[in-house]
Image (cartoon, rainbow, N blue to C red; front, top):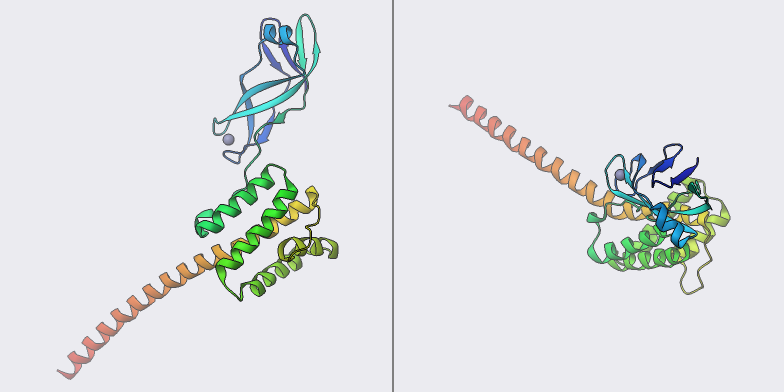
Length: 235
Ligand SMILES: [Zn+2]
């Protein structure tokens, strides 16, 4: 792909670009909205420029940074490597979490989205600490079972399991340094554990409560009809 800014300010992009949108989640085309001016670029000759696109699906702005390849008299050529300024946010049903857990867990996921994997690892341990404090004494064993579940379902190898276990359940030792691949496994692990512990529990309790309510209501109607029938028979 080539991108040119011509001397008459015309923006030319040889092919359409589609990316996953951090706002709506769709894999949608980026449509140029605001592009750099030829005269301003020639006057200051920056190494990088900014372009504002809009998401074809939700119309939200998408900001991109791109390197300048060449300054020519008739046009300016930009690199085809579009670097997105905004990263996609991790989605989670935060409304099911207690407020103090929600606050810490949101920040944990933000660290991951920002690509700060070691800050993310530290925040995962903090998330665990606040969840365990919130859920009481026997929670640690349950959370450990949830972790073993992820290890077995995800078929994690020994080295990965040790690294994640030390981050989540280690006491005072220094946290191991995390690479992108390990962080990717850790985020799915902790999201699943928090989901199982809070969201699954809340949804299951609500569903059971509703089923019981309707079942009891039905029982009481049957009893009423049944006792009426009995009264009619004895009369
Ligand atoms: Zn969008």
